[in-house]
Image (tube, rainbow, N blue to C red; front, side, top):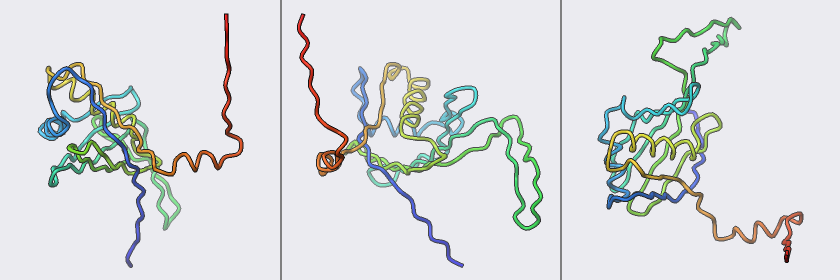
Length: 172
């Protein structure tokens, strides 16, 4: 039986700030050239982000990010109703995938919306930190994703009656 899957992608503009002349294409080429084990960022003791797939496709890149933690999983057998604990090795953790594509020359990214996967802010922070850690010329890089605002954004905001414009003039 065929299974239909719908995925929602959100559009972002990429911003990189650093003191070197590297382009956005250079940044993603550097990320792609790292070994898989070097494309891992420990956000905290509980959260780790990795980029197992960074594949060049035409002028852009297809990237899979996984976010995971150290929790153990309870596996439910839907036929018997039994549960069992899924014991992981020390170097393993449960994770959720997020997929995205980037067009470095256009500074655009389309990031899959995933309830459980990594969000744009942690993806950007992870890319930034991995580049800082592995490339001394990028030790001061700042990297972020900013949502692309649709043309009808103002119309949509104005449709909310509870949002109004307020001003305040303060004098000394």
